[in-house]
Length: 257
Length: 233
Length: 120
Image (cartoon, rainbow over all chains, first blue to last red; front, side, top):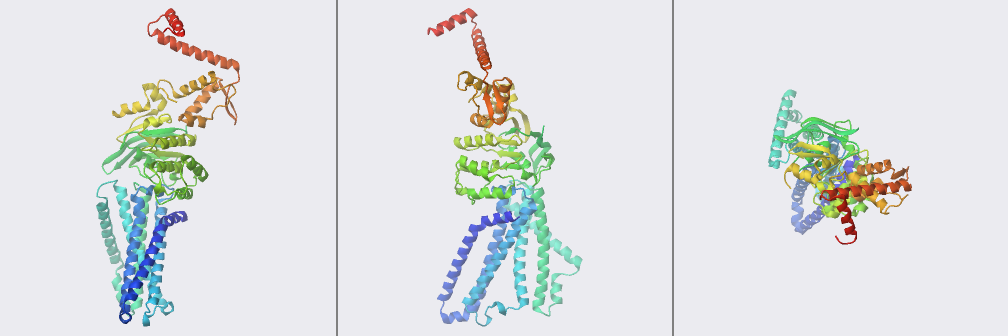
């Protein structure tokens, strides 16, 4: 398992270096633009700028991460070089597991980098009264931050697994057919419809939905967010595990590589 | 006699297309087999099923008393015809990868073979020429101490020097306890190497047997038999 | 080495080794190449070469020392016999060919003499 993760890391080392370099350059450029703004204006709108900055960076990182995680599997499944990995005497679950574990590690690293960038910029931009200081954040706020990041990473992984399963199904059923992308996308849509149906069925079986949970504990904002996040994490996790099992099964028993 | 691969009524369909039809073959320890036939005759599909990369639609397949799975992959050394070595790797790293993944990989032997193949350890795989890549592929595959070796088109599209080196490597590294299966349509290049041959056409075995017997019976070289069987040059 | 399709490859290799012995390329007691080396040199299957050595041994033209390799016999009588045997084969082949040209035995001998004197 470690060797598989080591391999994934070796493969990505150049990408990581480039990503770090680009991030650093973009950061310098952003700060340069920021300090070009006249100081009197700057101090007034720096809160807005910071808000946009936080959002844009989160969106950018999340998107790149998502693409990267999908490619992590797609490239091996659809490119000739993937044989080198899939020929090794590891079972399908292990091969897939190593990729996910690596993706998870990558996600944690990206999240940490994100927090670091936000924190640094908050310091540099002198975010006045709402100064970002680690000690200012209350423990339960920390909890929410960590949970939001976890659910983001989990959500991306779960989404990626849905895509993985579409790839695996395509590869199990078809062989070098035309309209590869179209068919895979069709499968992806079908899986998503099935997922929605499943959530509905489970929801009606349990007799409550996430909304009712929220409303019942609406007296305290943070608490309700916390509860919603908990349910979200559990639901995403369950879905991810199911998708993982299905994809691993196909990889081990059915797929035509 | 010890049969390392045994397939009974093996069948493979892709949707409605039949890729392999009713294949019954046994592969015996200590022999080199040729899998012959034009493109699309099913050679690669058969090898991929043996390598547990594709799954048969029906029929039975036993590899060293086991059903093919990731476990059999541990002693089946398969060399796909594709360029399957990651281009971003250095030659050195591709050796490291094999050493990490296969317990039966002999790194010392691989290093020695690379010298013979005249490949620089520090070169990047993507910068190797076609001939060098093919030589690296065979080096990695043959440096495993596997029970079953399968080489898919090892000589295809290569210069004479690469072909000669690869042939020498195959002969020199062949071991009497294993089975070697070589697919090719360049029959005259390797006919002296093959103990037995299997002719495939449109997914079916149309002729199989000992090379020597076949040659003597027909008084023709394997290449002439090939041309006769497939009815074109 | 080029091979023909009318004789098994192992016999063709045996013939080559025998003729090397007679012409003196291989001397009595000389060590032969190993199975692997010879297979690589001739680009043939190692199993074929193994059979060559087995057959040569059963004809007592070669012998194997455990862990040392295969050697040409040191028995002069066997070597002389080998030469006679091959000569006989060659003559039989030659006479067969001439007979197929409808030549009688006398005529063959006359042709041979003429050939030797350069008049053919």
